[in-house]
Length: 225
Image (cartoon, rainbow, N blue to C red; front, side, top):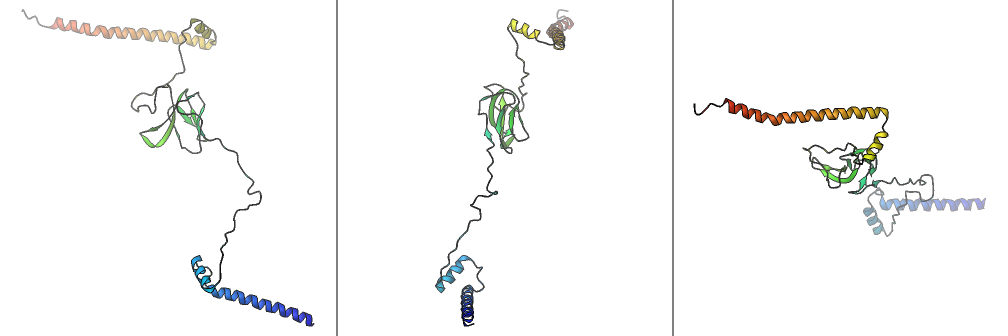
């Protein structure tokens, strides 16, 4: 019994000393435990105590499923430099959002990728009608610059080049299907008819001033009479 009493007395004295320490620490700050750090430092310095503020990490340093992710790069950015030649469907610029807008002879995909619509040469430029936007376009010739003048007709490429070699022309004609072959004959006839009509109209316009001059001279009064 004496042993239990002595043990209980030690526990009680320890609890009393612990409560006294906490009370004294609270008395130092009083109701200002949640005051700014400068006030707490001043109060502790005057009482002879030292406070050390420690900032603990809020991000888990150990490995966990939260930290276990690292997506692969999306390979965004420039794919065709200024002045480089591109083909139809070639990617010019890959982006997220419209950092660059589609210009002449280009289209934009659903993931904001700018794609060439015509074969040509890449141009990065600004449009005076849209000063806050940057455009990526394709010029049809290496000497052309963008943007094109807004009040002039826009250049177009029909995708056709004349075949000057007669052997290649005959070979290309033999490759045509039946429908394309007879359509080509019909188009040739239409072209010849338009050409004849145009020549007749130009000849009529050229002869009109001569007939008008002759009629004026015939209708003029005779000065000798």
